[in-house]
Length: 294
Image 1 (cartoon, one colour):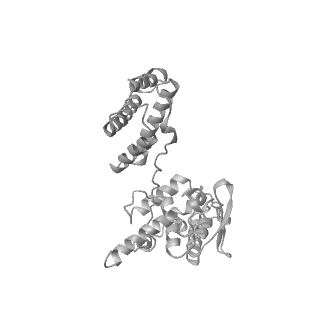
Image 2: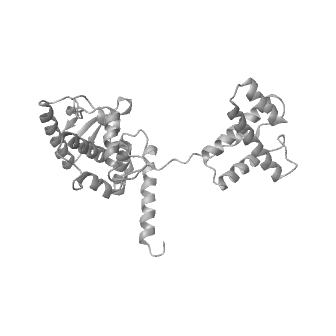
Image 3: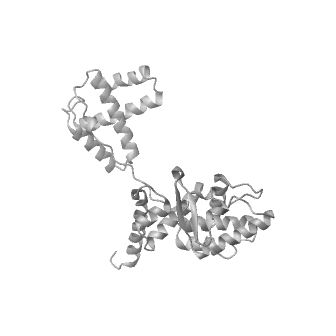
């Protein structure tokens, strides 16, 4: 009865779509079935926050993901708000219940062997302008951890070869300096030489198209995806995967979290901490493969 009143309210007063009304109805009836099976004396007026929490736990035990559970909790909250306003219940137990946190997916990254094969594999690259540019872009992402927009925005003057550092403009127009090594310096100098010979003159933008225009995000993304696909079957094959690869490699080889945070241009170390979970997952795999009792 109460569920029907609420669904009519959604249908006729809130003009919700038939699919939304059906979804709300299924969620509310599922909860009603749950608490009736728990205790036949329970009703919408007598269920409390613990019953709702137990329902959520039962859904988690059955393998429901946080997004699905939070959607059902949202339907329950909407129902109780309606019931309270219309004096169908005298309290709202859902108000104090928190939904489960969504699991944050671990960053995807390329293995060290895959990066070595991509960069230095025999027959992987030609001497063409396009191949030299693509290889340099990939090495740049891998050795500096730049964001896509940061790499696209680089000018030739952003690179200081004497100090071996790059001046980068990140989020919020904040600038930071990123150091780089002799290998990247040599690759950049080779690319600039090929680029200038290709056009017969120097250009302001560091990475340019065959027509001499600054590359845009889509063009860089295409080159990265095409070439990562040659060595990896990862679902994501984006410049951000190379940024993840940079961070993971740094932490796996002894870099401190605060140092990686600064190199990546993160505001908070909490953002960088996701990579410690990645490296821990790697440690677990190493442990299972190496320990005789694992």
